[in-house]
Image 1 (cartoon, rainbow, N blue to C red):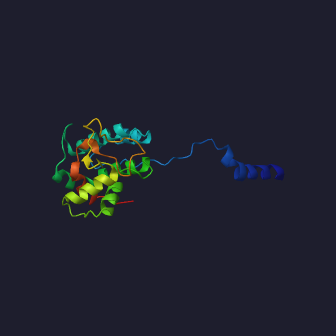
Image 2: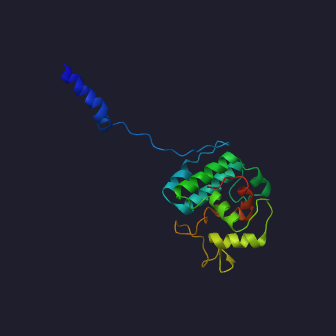
Image 3: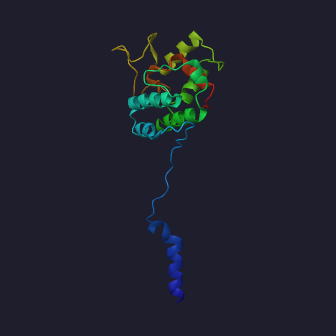
Length: 184
């Protein structure tokens, strides 16, 4: 009888981890939204490293947060009042799935490194340095995906902070978001 108890003890304490067939919990992304936005598609595109489609989806969810339609160009006031929870969700997904290369907080870090202040004002010389650093400006020419020769690089090898460009709809107003997001 004691031999059976010792065997059960051994199985419970030493072999159970190997015999347990229950799937282990996986780390999930926080997809929180103040506006009830479903960020599943953005997460899935980023996880699959479909950078261009993820950038388009980022624009789509951002206009949805604001209750706007496709083609909308963001205003300064909209960026000042963009819900922090949604901003952090979008940023965290970009940062996580790009291994820290892309996201608004990464862009903010670079903006600060080139001397950009977080006062909400636009400084042309700093904006140019920022554009040069993240690859939005090449040979003193701003790229927007409009010119055949100068394209946004939707690839993990593009410069740190290159994405998201949010389909080009944020323009210089992205600096307003920088004051509302943490850096990593």
